[in-house]
Image (spheres, rainbow, N blue to C red):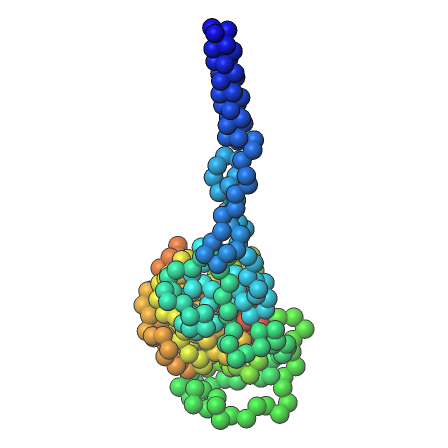
Length: 299
């Protein structure tokens, strides 16, 4: 009887031990089934990494990234800078992309920088050429420019771009380039020439309060101090291809959306965001800085 009870107890104990080993093996991480996290739409999300934290899925590339007519936001960009770099009004870019807050941009964000009705793949290929140089009083030029017929015999282009002289501009002198009449924006001497990498325009010396003139007819697309390094800045758009920038002013005399005429006083020279009193002047064609000496009349 005692042997029988002992044998039975041994069998029960063995069965319990075997069941415990089996349950332990089932609970082992080596037998854990793989897990996928899915979002509400059912697409596959990030799977857990070895350390237990989710590995974020790589963001999908924007279909228009790198294409003509689109701009990819870089670190430090603002909508004003994007407008300057693409030759557009920041307000237009805001509207074309349906942005609610112009102060909120994300690095890598792709913005449309041409009108929705325009073909973004077509760029202007019209060459820059000098048609004529004229000299008229500032007051008379603005009204006569629109009605004056083009010269029948354009002056031949020089073999090399003219270099600005360090002397005051002749009053009323203008040059036509790409159907736009250009004049000097200030009368001071040139203290810094154009350099694509270090200086994207011309530096023109002057005294505090010296007048700053619109270099050509156009529309003010920016007037303020929101672009770092430019101080009090005016940006004027002259055509679908060209705009000009006037930086470091002590006072701005125009507002956004205001139409200005060539030779009109738009600011007073100053030293905001600069080491001395000067005007930093840029001409940009389709957003790219170009040498103003190729457009302004010789002095």
